[in-house]
Length: 323
Image 1 (spheres, rainbow, N blue to C red):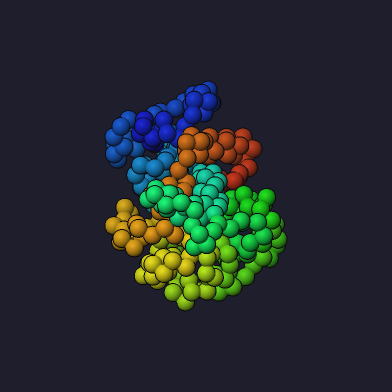
Image 2: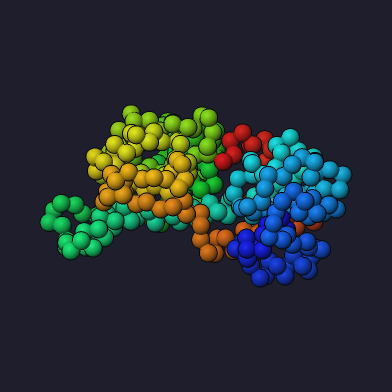
């Protein structure tokens, strides 16, 4: 278990600890996860369970006596394991799909809060005001058009949560097939079309192709009064153009990611009544974190027992487009 005791308490519940101790001979890490501790944990181990705070794992750790399986009780594995080992030498599982559900809930919460103008009402009431007399009014989500930029697991979770609201869901993702879009019950569109929606939610990984992909011209296509949510990567959106749109007041914006982090926010963001600012917590929930080790462990056990690759399996063929 290549995570500190504090992190283990965060991502591993009591039932999962009992399952680990019953099924495996477990080595738990100490407080200091240095190279010597990683080597001790890896020597003779079949499986290594990692999480946030686990250092990058060097290739030599997976020698003849090293693990053959890594289960990452967190999200991205790109900076954790050497890509060249994936496949016959190393099988990797990640809890990114479980974290995606927490992100999906965040997106739904932000979407509803901004559609109903809750941040603006909250600010007005705190400052001694009351109901605005025709200045603004909240709107319902039902019947709106929602665009998902990127077909990641977070976008899929958000799409599932949108089902009761009878919305039309569009998706821009050049890697998604028509058959996959049909299974998700979304309409594939190009990026300019996707931006012209009542809700635009960004779900792209940090790749060279996605950095700066949402330009000023694309932001201008979002209709007045619409909602823009970015819980993915700050670098996907032109920062100056986004600040200008927030300053104009014509969009309702939820930001959970920034560059750098933590950010130094300009007054036009902190004082704006049309923006919801959160500190990169879209995927951070009590239940979500406690479920992470179990999410990958169930798939690891199924792989060992039956050779099946479950929802947390990391497909080496998709490495280039992983978050």
